[in-house]
Length: 194
Image (tube, rainbow, N blue to C red; front, side, top):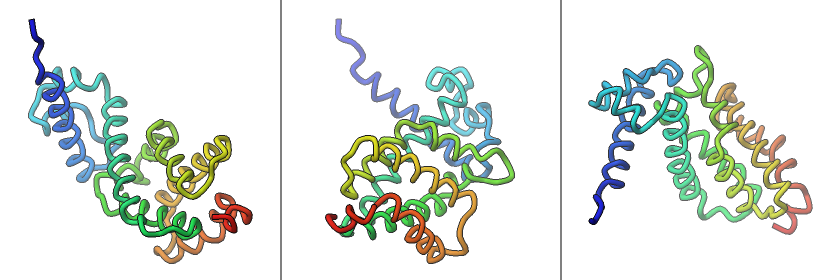
């Protein structure tokens, strides 16, 4: 007997609808203060339905962050696609990523300083963010797996630090990245060969 071939698609659509509703709430309130009952109500479903798709708030938060991380990575790579110099690509990639998060009220709320900054915790723990950041480091010309992993981890920490404690403006952040990040992520030998 054939199964319900649309079941997987309905599940995906329902989960996206819930995540969209959560995003709308995150845009209005700090992410750390949004509860499951609010998300269920905003999504137009019962809490039981919500829990069928996301076993707890942590699972929902993780799914939301991962979905947005993929979207932001695509946006960032599109924005810096023409930049080939590794130094400029590094700086422009980080600046574009910071700008994209800050311009999204839903994502900026993850770094609110009046509540626990859950965005920094999620960024540090997320395997998706780790993988995407490692892919970015590899795009800069680094191929040593240990160096890639360490540099990617450090870049995530730099980004979350700048989200929580921004520079005076984009040019100030660009100067800090040039002075303090480029020399670590792109040592002189790599800049010459890249």
